[in-house]
Length: 230
Image (tube, rainbow, N blue to C red; front, side, top):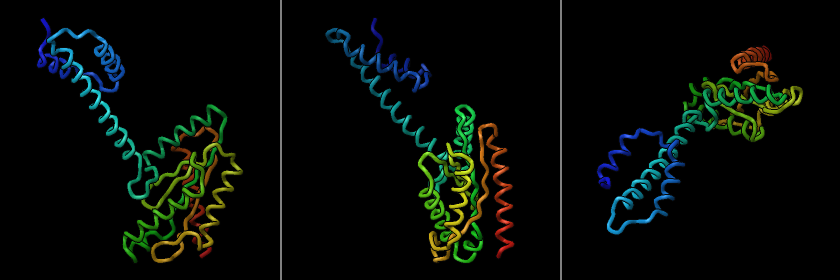
């Protein structure tokens, strides 16, 4: 006795199978059903094909939602940079690759100078625009393969991947010098956007946390030096 439409629907609903894992099976089954002989007057085959088409549409929709949720969970909403979670995930992968393939790289932390003063005097919209402009500047100065993350309110991290220590550290010094000119990046009020940098090289033997701590120490040393020169 052929199963009814209701029985077929209930069976699929009870299966509880992971949509992504059954997708290849659905494709194969759909092909087989399309090629199978259709008994005259039978509705089961047609209904099964309809259900399979619906299942594949659901799978495609879920995949799109999952991809978007993954992007949102690792992206800073304001600037479009990686957020702290996303940056640390990618940094971990880069450290593993450096250890495995003998690569090297440089991690730099970048902290905006006096963002609180901008927020207090001109409002948070002006402060937000400053953050966006700094990210745009950093993005334009590094390679597509490098990483940029906003890891705190006014702090960014940049990972120069597959970069030797002298070259990478020199690049960070160049970024700092460009901003210090005071003419390259300006905020909404026309004031120059200035920042302090702290950088450290890595070879693959570090962990993301120890690497961040080392860069953070260098960052605060740089901030103290800058304050002493004012």
